Length: 404
Image (cartoon, rainbow, N blue to C red; front, side, top):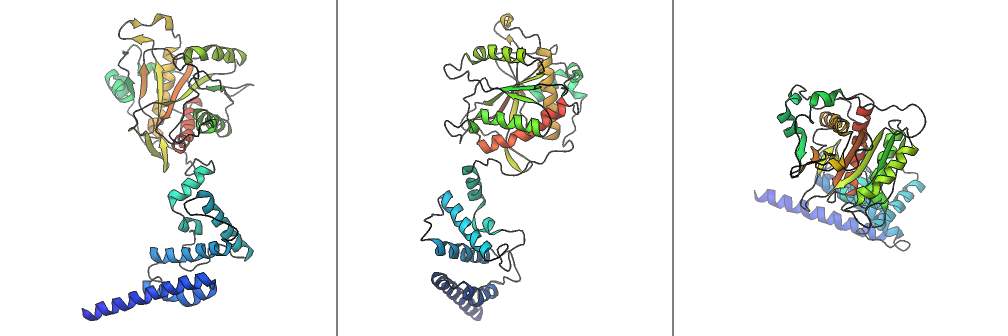
């Protein structure tokens, strides 16, 4: 046992001596000597050739390259690893040095072939923070679901109590019965949208245009619900071939309470000027308790959950709200229900239950009207933007007649 401890102490001493030599060589700039003298000793002592995932060696190798490049340029570039722009600058100068030397890739033995120096030198959190500062709010490329993940028993949907419990949340101010929520009737509704002819088929607008998210930038609409509308319009057009009119009228600055009344005349005018519009989407974000986080994972990405919302013009206290008549209520309910089924089948856990509340919410202007709540004020812009592509896929499947 004593010999074993003595040998271990000798190896540790040699290891720290090698590290000291490494730092000295870095300081004086002898990069070649570093790899010819110090690196083989480190490799031997840590068993690097036998265990290539040794994190300590990776740290030393990446440190030697990153720090060497930094020291060489420090007179021309003052940076701190805690400063995002500084980190980007350091990596830029290091990569330029490699390009000028004709080196492709990190050029270090033992590093995985698909492992770049950026990925070793920067933590994942740091890389994501850089992406956010550059305006890239997406953590990965979206992978569209090609087949259902869940099989829904459509026979059970005919049971009103089952339907209400598993697919709806009914606000305490209202109520709804089987005469409104008839699954057979809702499923028979033709929710398809024609893309033939000129003019937009879809209108996206925002009754509450000032809604933002946890890390929205004040005054930057690209990080608000309007930016989410821009992205949804882009995906629907570029990926699915729809023509979208994104209206950015502001109705909730003076008074949020009267925003729906303020938006109504503009929606009427837009629909009159664009008779080709077949779908109207009022895009919102929800308001929840500060401790609530509406986040799931879709395709490996942190993604804000979303919710369809329907007004039913009925209050428990007074009954039907006659002055808020909606001749398209059945169509509204059928449209959102078909969307909800597609969401649950292809992206389970992504869609919250459809929320039913007592008023009308301007859904009486068009049979295929949707009010969509994407995330909440506690979600990040990245999480909400990650939700756009799967939402667009769900909308497209129904509007193209592919589901349900």
